[in-house]
Amino acid sequence: MFTFPEHPGVDPTNNASERTLRHMAVFRKIIGLTKGGPGAMRRLADFATCVLTWRRHGKSVYEEVARPI
View 1 (cartoon, rainbow, N blue to C red):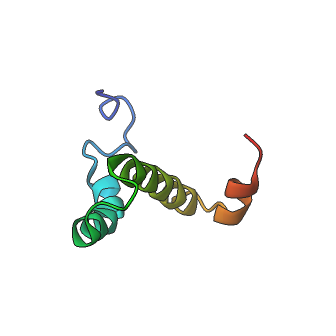
View 2 (view 1 turned 90 degrees about the vertical axis):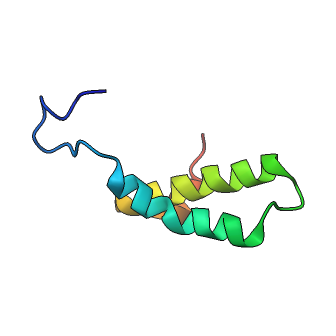
């Protein structure tokens, strides 16, 4: 929880993460729930989080999706 005092490169806030996911929150509010209900919305949010994380780390979204688990 308090990693930032020990590691100078770690930001003490999660603002970067929140800014990254902001457009997904706006998208969710515009379209409302999908036909699949809250579960479908959760899966969409989980997938979007993965995509944004892969992009942030410079990974190919297509390669990551195709990679066997």
